[in-house]
Length: 296
Image (cartoon, rainbow, N blue to C red; front, side, top):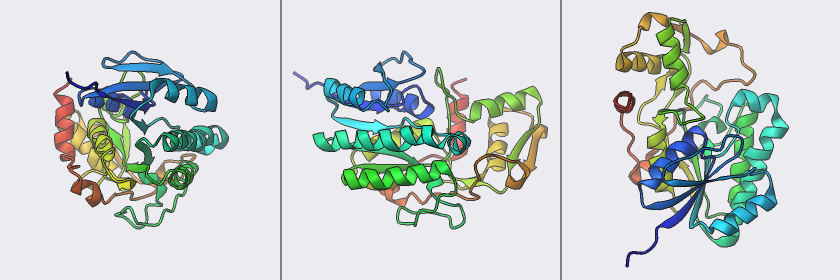
């Protein structure tokens, strides 16, 4: 008789990354349990539990009930501008809840993957490897740095996955920046895209693959960046070419031209050699976009 599939708990299942990860894990022989808070969803192949991760007692009860074999924590307040303007509220989910969940996994000696960000860096010394000194310039980045350090202190076997800019297929609640970008281009509205902001972007499905690989790593920090360093403007050009949109609506601009609550690092390119050696091999941005266009 075949053994029962292992149980994987994924927080933030209604978010962009969590939704992609739940789908990927469900096809990889995991019994998937996901959490949602404000936006409960139905997701084929996953059992979704509604919970406020800031409630320590409820979180412990959930873990005790599910008894997962591994946990991937994707839930977060991810908008840098929101975190800048709501530091206390965002700290509760980005730092406090993350450390509490890591502690529960440490107590049970089960693999724990925490999703961090390339925004732990200031963008002035790219490309960044796992050993590069952190240097956040806004509240969101500072919260992730704090969470990383305290998680590894509480549970040295945990894995910290720093993720880049992500794009991809939208779930029932969340979306990536790709959907509004395409909508704006189709509407004829002018789209301002930075020529001086560089990232190493990947799709949500590629990120999900990397996170599942991370469960097999030996813990520590792991960068899951894409294979290409490109600007926001260049990314827009690839979108226009792939989806057959009007390039005339694209307006090249600089970071200083757009005022935002949180300062923006100029170059957050990640060196992902370590993950590449584990089998993480992101396709080109053009290929990832082509795969998404084939879904339409």
